[in-house]
Image (cartoon, rainbow, N blue to C red; front, side, top):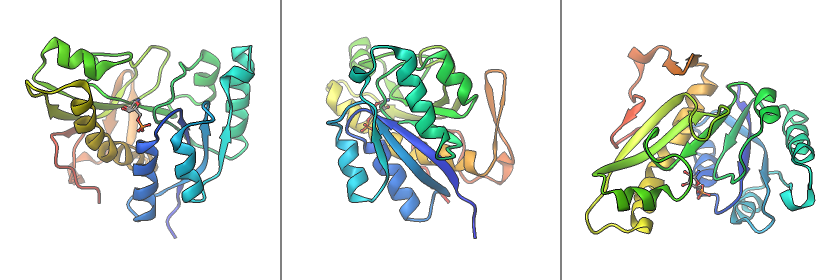
Length: 221
Ligand code: GRF
């Protein structure tokens, strides 16, 4: 039997990336097991997705924790006590602290809806439309102590059209997010990702059918 990577997923909202991960696991394309989903928002639709798929979840509402350190401590406890080896941030709206990062060194992944290092931070699809870039996309990266600055695992490119608005571009990018995030996690599960400084080396790259540059027809084996 294949070993499956124990993952924990942090969410705050809709959870469409969570759904993509659930679907890839259920279809046998991703060798991971979701040990827990943690939401800081009790109303997150992501929690409904957990209920539908019988996935354990915990709500850690940041409003209940006046001290940030206590919030982090609870997050760390819920993840470590379940043996989580990779933490997946999927639309989690809190910035990670040094304490959290040092509990999972190079074991936290994030997805960002732009081609980093362009457009870090929030509302980046709107910024891309307003700036007039011809391409944008999404990036999966390891988290470090900056905002959207960690070593890049995979990126996918999408075109930006002249009549796009923020929502149209966000939808086009999300479709790509749902392909590259499961792929990045699968590479981690296979032990193929090696971080050297700020670069991520993909081991055994010659055998791969897909590459860390995705534009945009990606097949997950
Ligand atoms: C995605 O656009 C992701 O890139 C960003 O937050 C959004 C989360 O969407 N970090 P969802 O909750 O997975 O639908």
